[in-house]
Image 1 (cartoon, rainbow, N blue to C red):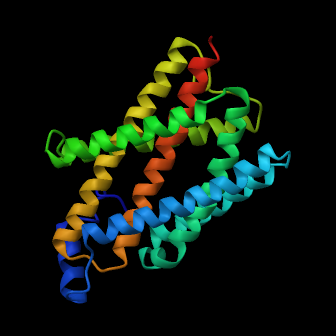
Image 2 (tube, rainbow, N blue to C red; image 1 turned 180 degrees about the vertical axis):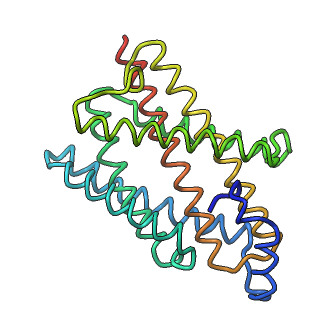
Length: 244
């Protein structure tokens, strides 16, 4: 259900706009929803973070937030009409998960969380400006390329998880070697370029008159990408600092 998905083309948006009249998706509305979800994510992260540094067990936070977030993401992706109700809950769940993971990284590498957050914000702003000024254009070939690369990364992570249950590790994926760091850099680039697909999806949805609930769906997609980008950046920074 991304902008690179052929089922979400201009004609789809046109049909939705004709059906829902003036009560349609807008860019400002999507931005507002994204801000609300970001605040909820930070609130959830604050709870898990404080629990960790107060001496509490963060494993339930990490596992619970990850599972709940994954389930909600699947429901929202397949049934976009649920986004207004489930997207805020997803933001809190992901916040709890990120707070737990970030606190764990912070205990090993002081200041890494702030560095990852600032880099994520900087990449987001840079790509937004590049998209607005049309330095980067979401052409069909661009969409297909990023979609294929993202799917490939997802398959590698899935393979790594399955093999991990049998004690087998995928070479270089989690290593702090130059090749391992290079792989992480590549994944960060692909995660960042997914933001361009999100910007394109939101802009097209507003132009074609998608229904109002798609504002929540657009904000949800944007948050999913930002969470992924942040996690990949903090993993990359951890690999680099572990070599010091």
